[in-house]
Image 1 (cartoon, rainbow, N blue to C red):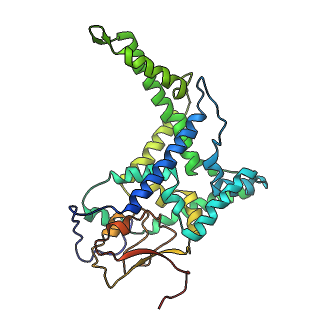
Image 2 (tube, helix red, strand yellow):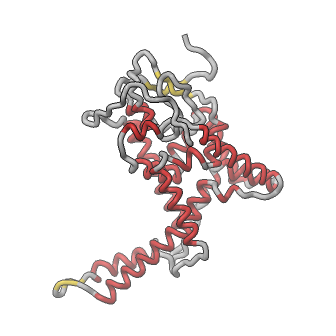
Length: 330
């Protein structure tokens, strides 16, 4: 059984009318969308189509991944110079917490999107919103991968979020999309539906020509494990309906590594108990299970800095401030 954190105090009643999402949340969504689109663009540069030119840094996100850097170093006792970019990720995390997970990681953005489809009653979201001891499992996963790398076997690619996301797109999602597009355009070409002299192919053929040159693969890709990888990818996304950002909370080894690095950030959540009305709407909207509500110990290692708690607080009791960890303010 998974414990659900603090029992509910006063019932949480959401007043949807009049509730406004803060500009920070909209800004975060824009940044997330930009990085996701960048990841997809770089992914398409690796697909073989007639004008394929993989000249730009298609490995950018892997270079920013400190889990890749540290496991390569442990397993091979060497470090590719491009992986030194991952030090930027670590430095930002040390000072600002797991901002990378909440704002940059494209796989995290997909989980965040699917988590937003959960909906449901506030009570159910409250029960599933708090920190649970099962969130420690991602740290065990991290320890397993670091241990295996230490003895020369680098297995981090199994569950590293960029590797998992790229592998799922390359072997399952993109081949399915490519096949569906080829079959659909082929069917329209053969049937050539229309009204009088107005034919559908007058539109579909120019569109197909553009897609064929810039998006679709020159040959239909086939992979032996496509179905299995696709099912695993679908399961990872479906788990978000059970817990918001399930992967990020319980599985992600990169999230665990950044959680360790960002355990004591200078950008900290502060919840004022004097103004808090104990509605716990912040907990219902928390993506990481970080216990943002007043009266509970906030867990920075689990906080994704999504700012949902600050945006959902009707009394304005939650804020993020720069403070030196361990120093009590008067």
